[in-house]
Amino acid sequence: MRVAVPREIVPGERRVALVPKSVGQLTGAGHEVLVQASAGAEAAFPDEAYTAAGATIVPSAEDLYGRAEVVLKVRRPDTDPTTGRSEVELLQNGAILVAFLDPARSLDTVRALADRRVSSFAMELMPRITRAQDMDALSAMSTVAGYHATLMAAVRLPRFFPLLMTAAGTITPARVLILGAGVAGLQAIATAKRLGAVVEAFDIRPAVRDQVESLGASFVEVELGEAETETAGGYAQQLSAEHEQREREVIAKHVKDADVVITTALIPNKPAPKLVSRDMLLSMKPGSVVIDLAAEAGGNCEGTAPGEEITIGGALVCGPLNVPGLMPTHASQLYSHNVMRFSLTLLKEGGLDFEDQIVRDTCVTHDGEVRSATVRELLGAASGGAS
Image (cartoon, one colour):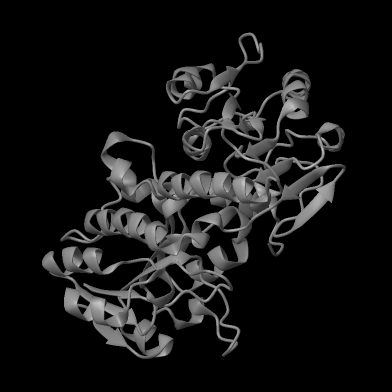
């Protein structure tokens, strides 16, 4: 099939959906690959590298989309600020689209894709099964985010991370608290430990204690009795109001003593849980730093301003957006591998196989219909309103 990779048009997005190495693997499987000119430039992958890997460089988005049977993207379709045209309008009727579609927050886009009879697949809906591990783009991007968030904190903290013994005296190590021990949290723990900090980590799932402690951090536990804390897919479960209160009481004690807090808690298709109150932020010492990785979903902290850095009390509270996009080379490399492996599963002879759990679970729209039950529920709840 003819697989196309456009240049991303969302402001600030520097990643590319396919790197040259993955192009070679797709062409080796019999697919033709088209790449829009300069699509990989900001991720340090020049057009010449794509040509050498067997891709054809196409000068314009209109030409690319007009020839594409399959479109591989990082971000969901958007409107090009230079032309005013929507990428959905450029897609051929019946084309296949693979991207981070963020369907819960882009219901209008979902409707438009269905109207255009596009078969769309959301990488964030990848099932957590063994066979799909090398297609798990959420985990790949969380690895990048957790690593980079720690570096952001280290740069902004007005003190060292490690213990230093100097002729001018001893510098005590920074205390870092990680809230959420998923992939991003674990990578943040590992990075903070490498930098020499004393690290604590909190998660409502007792099962992650061993992973936290294996990285050298202390596990902060809250007693939740028999409460269900984890979904079947391995994600954190939303708690009852009583358990959330108990959780906040424990977190407050550790936030107060921390030099750095990195929050990573997300619940699929829901706003991010508020783990850090404004009072907790006000209790932090002057010069402390908070990196809220859940800013795009509303933030884990009361007062987080998405895309901004603000001071609350003595704490600098940062709400970065698209953190993986700040490290575009390796983020693209990881995502490209995920997308390439998924594409090889998707583009088998005989057409789309909806008996395959990977294909079925990731499908959002197909043949003019919204196939995802979760997205259909959201569309129903929106009662036809815009999102």
